[in-house]
Length: 100
Image 1 (cartoon, helix red, strand yellow):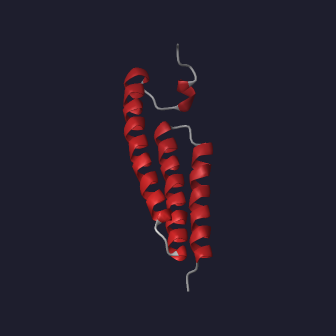
Image 2 (cartoon, rainbow, N blue to C red):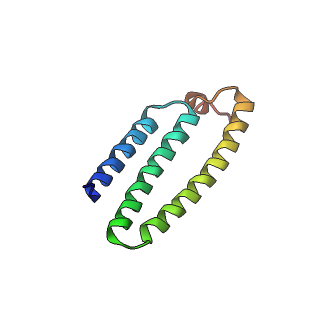
Image 3 (cartoon, one colour):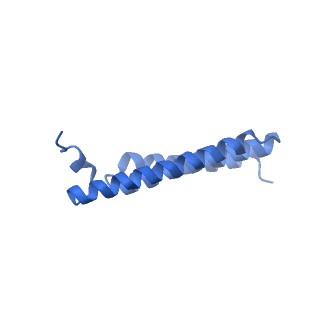
């Protein structure tokens, strides 16, 4: 039988994969993807906890996180397209050389 601990362990593993991706990546697209993985790991934990508690609060928070993640992706991709048109690269080291 699958318990809450199984879901929370899965959520922690997915979150750690996303965290490693945020720490190790230098490409901005992969950085956004790793952030999305971390947010989805939190969603898995919230929905599992809500299901085992028998209330809807965790599922409602997960829906809000999905909405926030969608807006983050929309704004982030717009900025990435603008940055790529200007510099020709999506490397994080190139961002440090920005002129003000």
